Length: 291
Image (cartoon, rainbow, N blue to C red; front, side, top):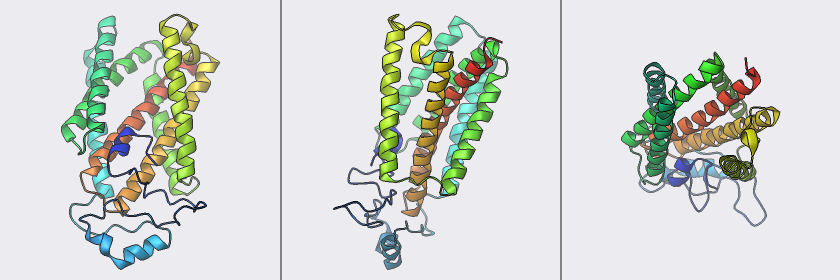
């Protein structure tokens, strides 16, 4: 099962022959729970540990051994802090140095396109490139800084409320995930991905209709009640992405993923959080009205 995140779908967190992290209930004719092969077994001494195999047979991912060169939660947290910190610095500088104007709007679009290209290049690389990831974060930060200032100029305080909203959604999603209220299984991922893909396709079609003047006032992405409903759905999809990210990071650590995978984890989390923030910013503006 591939991740919703293009980064995770390219490297160790996902494999074409099945994702080791999804310990779903056995299906008719399918493998038993916990019998998936360790995707990091090659060159990993832990893969030969009989206690690890016993853990797998009981349906739980193994506990990662204390060894050098393997990803840990500290690695993920540190890389995520660096990536999100770069986004924040870029946003602050763009807000402070680029006044609201058509020129700054053009710069924001340019920064977003560059960030998209860097993200795609990294997504199709076989190894993590910190330079590409931090470059993506810097240009994404410029884009977010400009559009945040634009929203703030019309809806005062909207960016601050969007940041709080993003933190609330992320924190609530983590709490729900850690409490076990959501089981990230292959079926859960399939259903969620179907909804997410449908959402992206419909949104893309809506954008084309708006560009060619068929849909007025933004269509599905208007600033009215319909736009609010679509925005809430987008945020829920972002929360779905987060649950997949959490599960994949957790299992990557348990299965002894290489240390450099922490950069990919940080990259994926950053893209998901940016998604949630942008949607939250639109939602705050909608509920703020024209005041």
